[in-house]
Image (cartoon, rainbow, N blue to C red; front, top):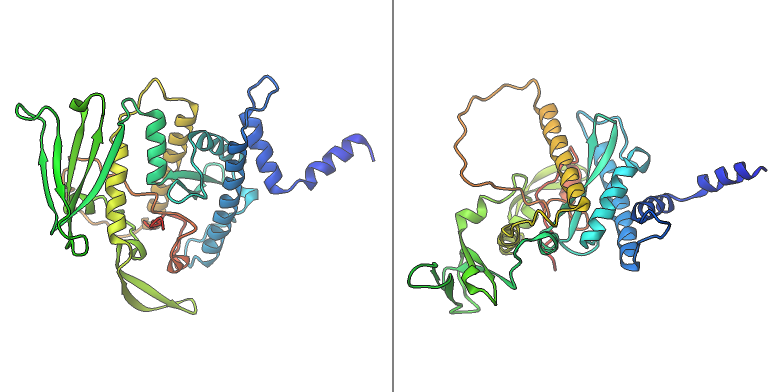
Length: 342
């Protein structure tokens, strides 16, 4: 066999994981022949392959079960935009997101109809948002306090004014074993060397719940969930879920999203992750249009919105903790689930 034929055979014999790692390593290359890939980053890349492989298999099972508008393109590695995925892996690894760690980042496959391939977006969890904020933040607090406040607790905030040099608060848990019901929460940015910059933001329960994702899963937020038996929906049942944990995470995410990004720190990795997220949003919109096409329109006047409310995506797609009933869903969109982090 010729040398050319042997090379071609060797390439064909490479496993998908090897081809994936080779692409990632090539993108880490400094351009002068030296591979700038640390052992930590190499481990992260391997973790991304493991999670991506599992995510694709789960998405393909859902595609096959879809009862209407089933996509004809299988969700398999052969139909994944590998170049795009490798670039996202490099960017996420440099930020420090580890897909095998709870609440770092979730991988969501989505269909890019323009190229008839699947992309995989990287949606950060609340720990992932913290890591990104600390890397790209303009003024990073020395400490961030996040607390839920219950009806039996005592809480009083103090705004920065002529009587108070900086924002502060009093918070007392009166009874550790009977704190009552959640009535709100707060986060507090602490700057040790410059307390005048300390920032206190208070949330009512209404503020927390309006950030609840549209596709929130009862498995995590509590409420009624479908009961399935032998592939058929047989009724509903109530579950407590992880309501308190979800409320806490909502404030935690807001606390780190409130850290202003330093434009001088923005790099190719940051822009790549933003680009991938935008591609996913566009694919979601296209899917919504397809699902609701030719249906009767409902004419409503939208209410004005004074505050941007972002979906809780961490929570949406952790493939290791996705509730069993979600296997019956019709599409690949996130379902508003979250990993409670235990």
